[in-house]
Image (tube, rainbow, N blue to C red; front, side, top):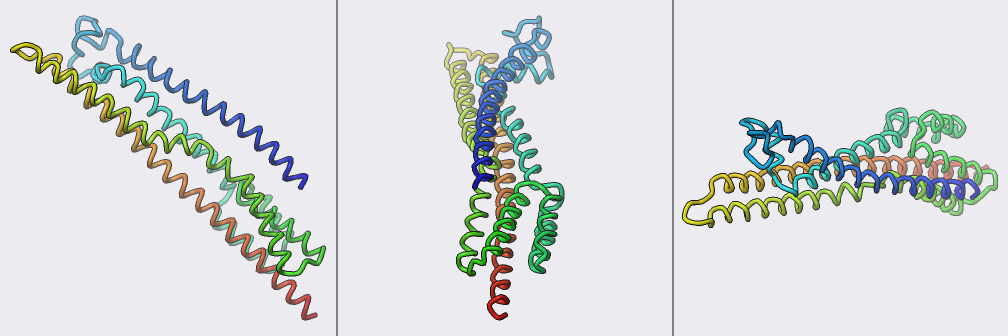
Length: 279
């Protein structure tokens, strides 16, 4: 219980630090998006006569994106957020998997537990490290405890399962942290892109309705703005949804590995008590 309390305090500190990181990252990504749009894409050298209000130089894509309007820097910030948070979750979940292959680790631990080599199984956990190893080791420590105290199978099973669930509840929140941001970017990216598309089409139709002769330049700018915002919004949503599904599947795999090892620990104790009762 003391270890669980210490872990809760540590996890609260880590959670607060993670919240600060997320907030700073969101603000920084938006600021970077605005700066890139204004000073790199909107640099006078990208436009005819050095005028950002004029036409882009032929084939200059930076200037073309700049002409996408004021929604573009927001979309660039969202795109940057999707990339940054995806890298951050990738490193965190990779670290949680431990130093070796998770499937191989679970098989080794299961064989050691089934053979009654609990100390060797704990040594494998220390060698593997990561979330799965931490939870399995907590279950093994509880196994040794109930074994010394001579619990019957039902009480021991409940105690071991509770210990594994508590250890899992301490480890898993850090894996799922910031996934809600990535999932939110799926919707926000699409909606922001749609907003830019609508504003671009409004400009295009305004050019068509301006007098008897449509302003071809304004019409082209409006259509360009609509398409650029659409493309950027779709890119943001695509990256976010791919990585969100990838990370959730990895977390599900880690959870399944914990369940597998926990089931083996409980079954081993049942066999131990059965042999003890027969003796």
